[in-house]
Image 1 (cartoon, rainbow, N blue to C red):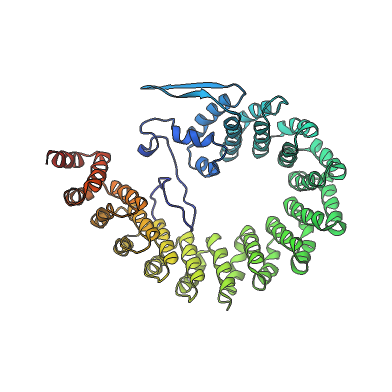
Image 2: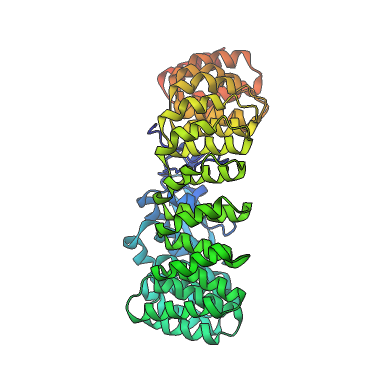
Amino acid sequence: MSDFEPSGLEPQIGGKQLQSRLTGYEPSLGGERRFDSNIWGRLIDLRWHSKEALIAGLTTALCELYAGILIQVMPEGSVFNEHLEGGVVWAGHYTPEQRAAAAQSLGLIGARRGPDLATSLVEPLIGRLVPYEDEQVRVEAARALGLLGDARAEQPLIKVIPGGSWRLRMVAIQSLGQVGRLEAFAFLVDLQEHGETLNESLEAMKALGMLGSHLDGQPHVQIFDGLMRVFIRGDGLQRCTAAWALGALGNPQALDPLLQAAIHARGELQFSAIQALGMLGDSQAVPPLISILTSSDYRLRQDTADALVRIGPAAIGPALAVLQHPDPGIRRSVIEVLGKLRAREATGDLIGQVDDQYVEVRQAAVSALGMIGDSAAVEALIKALEDPDADVRKEAAMMLSGFGDKRAVGPLCLALWDADMMVRWFAAYTLGRIGDPRSASPLCQSLGDRSENVVNTAADALLRIGDGGVPFLIERARTGDRAVRQVVLTILERIETPISAAALDELRGG
């Protein structure tokens, strides 16, 4: 496997999620500045839903930097100015939506970076639960406090529930399940029994399941007994919620009743029981879940596969035993389980599935081999670049990016001429990850591709190759049209070496 660090600009179509480590010094993310306006803009955008992935890629120092600024802009009427070299970089008044996004980002940062940072975020977030604060800000602050898991939020969350809006009450109840202790236990039991609405009672039941997972002694026993009563005697929706809560509670005594529901129930109760078994994580549930996986419809298979993945390595052997099932849909689900479990011992069997007659099985096998990352799979992935189906080819091109294996350079260069744009795009990206100068000439040709995505990714790949690609860039500038020439000049400027500087002088002088 290659130790190449992703840039964060990777195309994300299928396969494993690639993590980036952003330092704030990337040329594409703000040049020399430690603070980056692109990152900041996403952190205060409530509609941008990939904050968790973005924050996962930030260093601890950057998390602390942005957390400090987010705290300052979160209060109502906040104004903040940041002066860097060259003048004011950003400034302004922050809208309620932006301040709500700031609270949301603080919760994600604290949850990601642990108690050392999270401890300092609790009080500022509690301060945003006040009644005169904007509703969106209160909701996101309550949600963030749940993520931080700090017991100091217990009483403030209890206080906002009686007079809060329906949305705020639901979020605060959920967060109490994450942060609460004995006071929250008594409050949630009462709310489950006497809630104003059915939704409130059900949410309190789920919160009790989460709360009970970090309580012991009599409160835990009480929660278990109460949930079991509802699970056995409640109506349909109550039983489904109780099943989920039992999974969250984590009491092994729930295993048998949940298994019975997963096997014999139908409809939403069966789905809930299967999900709960995954949350419970008991390896004894694996054989029954495998049986359900091999005899159910697509939706149930997906939920069962997710449950097996949550249970973990204990599912690998039983999953391998049914890998040759005659139903292609079942084979696909089993392959997805093995891939998500990073089952290295399944590599050989999965290589055999790359030649399956069904497209969905071949694509799943290619993706699983990429997630597992065993170098023994490289030849099979290279072969998959010639698959008749474009989805399989593009998955192979993407999965090869995780290996950095130079055996793939030639086939990937050929893939730059593929009829499917996505295949060309991923091929260019993976060649950049490998960084072999042999790919410079084909990548230079891709600078004239009709797809802007392919052009930009090829340019980034050539930038990574550096001086090894300069002779080919010079030739491409001389033979290409004006647009290609401009792209070449930009690449040479960004390489920033004496060789690239000399090439720039040569081209501009000519």
